[in-house]
Every structure is written in structure tokens, then in C-alpha cells.
Image (cartoon, rainbow, N blue to C red):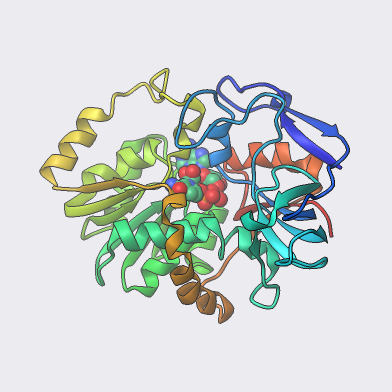
Length: 343
Ligand code: NDP
């Protein structure tokens, strides 16, 4: 049994030195518990926040503890009637090859519904986040215009495709020509702009203004930074901004120490919210799991018949997780980042 622990807290950018591989002996599953071997581990941007000390919406990972994470695993031994050896389950096994968890905290994964790894992506937490944020806080109306950053990622690709299905104009922002091409050709975005090619937010704003001739009604916030600064002045009266994440600023730490881009965006943001009567709503997906069934009912058939496309970036072997995670934070992943831990 091996696992990856948090060896030290990052100062700014995450590095290889923040992680350590350890091996050990697993405890036997007690009554009501299940022993499973991890097949697919999910890597997600929120893990960056867990590496910092201090209170966020969830506690930090302590130094020397296993890095947190959800995984699809195969039950090897079960001391609970709910599961039998061979069953596939979704649970918080962390960055580890195996785990022992209470059966009550596991969800069954149905391999006949879709490939099991999709329980971590398009049909799992990130897909659900895109669906919930758009429905509950984006409140999309036919004919409106939506902008979303990290457009080819696990969340952004769901948001853009759903917006198109609901009759909106969907404009993506993504890093690099390959991702932008994919967003338009494979995901059906009406347009996609490359934030890495734009030297500053003013340039990106001009490009966005052209791609959104009727202004922006919904900005689904995944990235912050240059993209946020470019979109704000284009928001229409009565616009909505579901605030899902701001990956462009995660290395600033919990309090945004250091000022990031060096500009104080607060006056611009605050004034736009007032003048354009915007509804800006932060949300954390764990508050909304009572709607997960509703999400699956709508989206699983769309995935099955190909109306919602999905894309994974698969790293091989548990030891590859730290590098794959650093790639994700730097935008070098292409689609939902998974680590294939075992066959
Ligand atoms: P992705 O698969 O989209 O991967 C992250 C992507 O972020 C990268 O590929 C990169 O794409 C983009 N990115 C990185 N740095 C920057 C930057 N400086 N500016 C613009 N884009 C950047 O991840 P997810 O789909 O899993 O997550 C998307 C967002 O949703 C994150 O902010 C995440 O924290 C948030 N989230 C929030 C949840 C909640 O409960 N509120 C739940 C789940 C996710 P590119 O190369 O295109 O720039």
C-alpha cells in the first residue's frame, strides 16, 4: 500500500518537494467498513487550497497526512452488507493505492452507465458543479450570452455545452489555440478566445466584445485574474456571475496576500455590480448534493447519446500524481485530470 502525503506547504507555486511517497500496512476493515483498491484518482483545483494552512470552507490537509481526493475503487473485502468484492465505489480514498473506509461514505459506481472514470468528471463532482452553478445561479435564458473561463476543463466544458443546449450563445476563454479549437469544434462553443495569447486584459476585452456583440448576461467565474477583468465591463444590466472558482489566483494563498496582478480590481468590480445590478453568487458544491439525482437524470442521457462530450487527461500511476497536479494548476492538462492508479 502506498500513498502520497503533504510533505510541506507551498509558498506560492506548488513544487515536487511539497509531496512525499510513503508505503505502509493497511488496517483490516472493521464492521461496517470496506477495503478497496483505487483504480482512478481525481485531481482537482480545490486541492491547492487544502495545501495551505488556515481556515477555508474545508479544513487543510496536515503535514504528513495523505493528500485528499476522491477516487473510483474496486472493493476487495467488505464488512458491510451494502457492498461485495468486485463492486466499484466512489469515495474519499485520497492519493493512495488502497483504502479502508466506512461503507456509509461510499457511493456505488455503475459501470454499465458510463466508463467508471466519468464518475470523477462529467458525471461526477465537476460536471455537477457546472450544471448546478449554471442552473441555480446563472439562471440562463434562451438568447442570452454566456462567457466561461477554463472552457475545456471539467467544469467549463459542462457549462458551455449546457448553455448551448439551453439556447444561449456560449463564448469560452481557454489557454492556447489547441484548446480553443477543441472548444469550438468538439464542444460546440460559438467562439473561444486564447487568454494566453492576449498580452493584457484590455486586449482580451476587445476580443470578447467582438465575440459578444450583445454584451454578457452570464459570466461563469472559474478563473479570476485577466479574464474577470476583461469580462466585467461587458456585463449587461441584470447579469449573473456564479462564482465557482478563481484558479488564476490560487497561488496567492487564502487571503490573496501580495496583491496578485498588482492592480486593485475592487473598485471596478464593486462599481460594475452596482451600476449593472449584477447578481454575484459564490457557491460550494458540497452544499448542493441533494440535487445530484436531478443532475444525473438530466445529464447522464445527454452523455450517453453524445450530446455532451467529455475529455480526460490520464496520468499513469500514483507516483505521477504530483506532476499531474502541477500541470493542472498551470493549465497543462487537457480535460478532466485523472490518475490511473491500477487497471
Ligand atoms: P480544469 O479541468 O478546468 O483545470 C484547470 C484549468 O484552469 C487549467 O486547465 C487552465 O485552463 C485554467 N487556468 C489555470 N490557470 C489559469 C489562469 N491564470 N487564468 C485562466 N485560466 C487558468 O479544472 P476544473 O474544471 O476541475 O475546475 C474549474 C474551476 O472550478 C476551478 O476554479 C475550480 O476551483 C472550480 N471548482 C469549484 C467548485 C465549487 O464547489 N465551487 C467545485 C469544482 C471546481 P486553460 O489552459 O484553458 O487556461
